Image 1 (tube, rainbow, N blue to C red):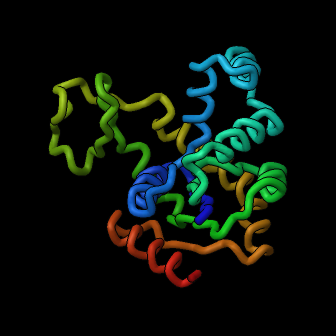
Image 2 (image 1 turned 60 degrees about the vertical axis):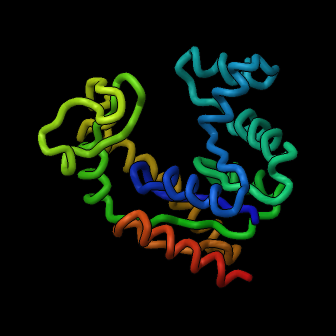
Length: 209
């Protein structure tokens, strides 16, 4: 099964995609991981992407599309894949339709005010990267796994979070409309416990069979 995950920053796409990948034994593919791996391996397309990133520029659609296309052509995707972070705009969605058959597009929906609270309260271990939330820390300021210092990421401040959510809303609204028109879009309530979100996703996918 080939699945696309949509959802604003903080909606839990990565968590749900990872859980689903484990259940179905298919790869969870994020564009960030693809970029990092290709840059690390110094592939020709990876070096092109690195050039844009090093200049502080957005990687063009055509480069991103080629990276994703190359990834889903690998052997571990033969039984399906989960795309997280792609497509980000209609041009990418149209390009994806030309080289992959998508079975479902899961949009994890959550109110923007809830997302702001979720993201601004996030704390990351500076040492191992483990994620926490201030609502559940009880004043603790060190990681329970490695005792590293818990910090707030620069892109998790109120101003930055609101800007990220606004950009997402503007850019992704047309993508949501694109997939609504194809009949592939399935909304899932993201404003509930992680396991409940996961169960709802499973039910949506089971209904497709």
